[in-house]
Image 1 (spheres, helix red, strand yellow):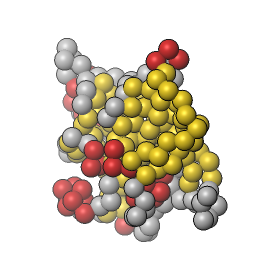
Image 2 (image 1 turned 180 degrees about the horizontal axis):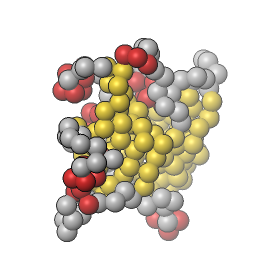
Image 3 (image 1 turned 135 degrees about the vertical axis):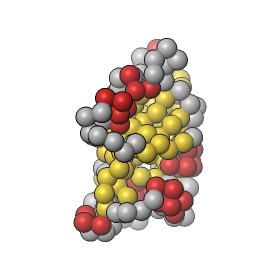
Image 4 (image 1 turned 90 degrees about the vertical axis):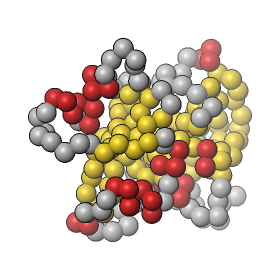
Length: 189
């Protein structure tokens, strides 16, 4: 049992090999990234889990169900990203952060969205010093296609926010500086 009260939230967890649909339990007032960044706890307890192979179809095809179980302790370091819960709790003044449009590259796809970083911080410095789980706002999932340039790919799915594991991204791209109406920046908004 948990030592403190928890709130149940549905979650869709993506790892390299699996998609897990189930319930996760957040501390009241805390966000998903806050729970995943908690030190000393290497696993995320989930209940009522439906287990599918890695993929993106949502909702998943029922025939693709691999297993169902009452409980899975998901190793946090293996989580690439997840949908569900709440955005992270901002630990500083809103005036001290800015949102930057980023794309996180994974095998065969990328997630694009806004990440809150300290004002004026270099992205490489922030990535080197921050906790691995972060909230990506106004996010989109884009499937890479060899027959189309990246800037022409339409989002496969959109999210108000996703919680990403920066340590699992194969690369992080920052939106290029330019005119907001420059059509070459379609990927970033």
